[in-house]
Image (tube, rainbow, N blue to C red):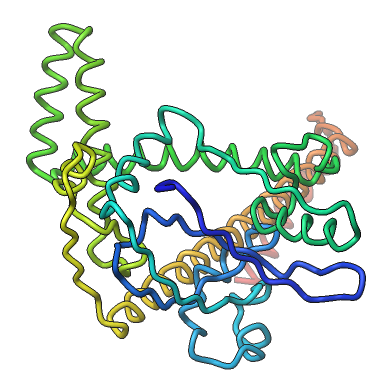
Length: 338
């Protein structure tokens, strides 16, 4: 199956049940045929923010002992570790089915294969291990009663939905800034032509949406040139189109040196740590400003209460019959003092 996903999990073996340590999954169509892969894959258990931070910054501690990774580095507090995987993918058709699976996933749901396990204690143990390997902490979508109810999981699903919306908004904002700043001149000029065309006839918006969606698909398939080979598409966009059309793709494998991949991963991890530090500093500064505002409000409220307790000052006239006699004496004494 070109759209198959390789799921891996690590367990701590016990007498009655195995305790899951973490899992990972990779799409087979992301790998080039006739290529041997040797890589470290980080494990995920609950997919919390701490685990995401540990996995994104793992390159900073990849060459240190495991005990020091979790104990010494600030980003590895919730790390679940990583497993080393060496495998090779060979396609009988050269990768045509794998290329077509990128479009097949949009048209219909992937095929799921069911495997029955014996109705014994060991069979139940194997079933639970397989269930965790495929779907993680949660339940099997084929069995609605397999997932226990938990408000924490509902909150997790809600956060995931909100994160998807925020990521879409952030991607749209980044794309708009790229068009406005002419970072890609041809794409910006095309956007200007599309805007003029849509202003003239709004119905053309549908056609231009399809055009820019195709360009986005092309950018996604081209990948990032700095990314490791495991994260890059195994072929260019033109060869992918030839494969979808039924032609045999000729994959040109250009392996990236390990040191170059490691340097890129460390640079990306440092950027994650720097962004996290900046966000923490901003949050701390905002907390200080809020505390200062609260103190200022308290002072203003105390002054207001004191003013209300004292009441407004009253003005009145006073009469002193000895003022004409004492005023000359006061002036003489003042002149002597000077």
